[in-house]
Image (cartoon, rainbow, N blue to C red; front, top):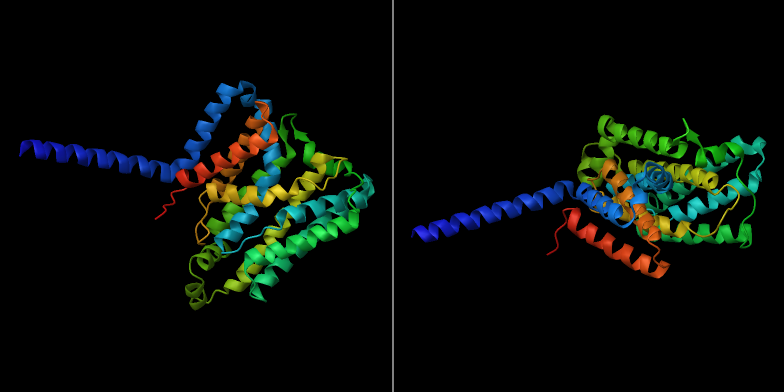
Length: 330
C-alpha cells in the first residue's frame, strides 16, 4: 500500500514537472528558441554575435519585419496577403526607375510608392470584403497580376537607382551605429502595439478576428475593419519597399521578393499568431523575424550551399512552429 502511494506520488510529481515544462515552452518557447539559436551561433560562428554583425542582421530584418507587422494584423483579423513580395518588388523598381537617382524626384517617388502600396492593399481588401473571395485565393491572383505588370514594365531588365535620401533610409546610420531602417521598424512596431492595446480600433481588430458574428452584433463592421487592415498592410509593404530600394541603392532586382510572403507567414506563426484569428502578438512576430534572419545569416556564415541551406532552414522552422507556438495536433 505504501509502495503504491509512493509510486502515485512520484508519478504525480513527474506529471506536474512535465506540465510545467510544457507550459514554459507554450508561454515562452519563442524566447527559448532565440536563446538556443544564439548559443548555436556563438559556437559555430562567434563573429556573428559581434555588435556590428547583429546590427547588420537587424537592418536586413527590418524590411521583412515591417511587412510582417502588416501580415500579423491581417491574420489577427482573419485575412492574409501573399502578394506582399510582388508588391514590394514592383514598388522598389518604380522608385528606382522613376527617380533614376535624381534627388529632385525623392518626394514624388515616396508618394508614388506609398500610394501604390495603399492601392494594392485596397484591391486585396475589395476582393475579400466586396466580392467575398477567399483571402488566400484573392492575394494569389493579385500576386500574379502584379508580377505580370512588373515584367511588362521592366521587360525583364530593371533599371535606375534610388535617390540619396532613400539610400540614407536604407543604409544610413544615426550616431554612426544605429541604422535608420531599424529605428523606423522600432517606431512602427511601438505605434502598432499602442494601437492594438490602447485604441478602440485595435480592440475591433481582435474582436472581428475572434468572432465576426459577435462583433457584428456589437455594432462593429468586420468587413470595414478588414478593409482598413488591408490598406495598412499595403502601406507597410510600401515602407518596406522604400527601405529595400535604399538598401539595394543602384541594383534593382526582380529576384528576392518571392521569399517575403512565406518568411512573413513563418515569422507570424512562430510569434504565436493563429490562423483562427483574434489572437496575435507584434512582439512575437518581431522575435520570429529576428529568428528567421539570424538563422539565414548563420547558415550563410558557415558556408552551406543554397540547397542545403534551404532544407535545413525549412526543417528548423517546422520544428519551431510545432514545438514553440503551443499548438497541439490531434
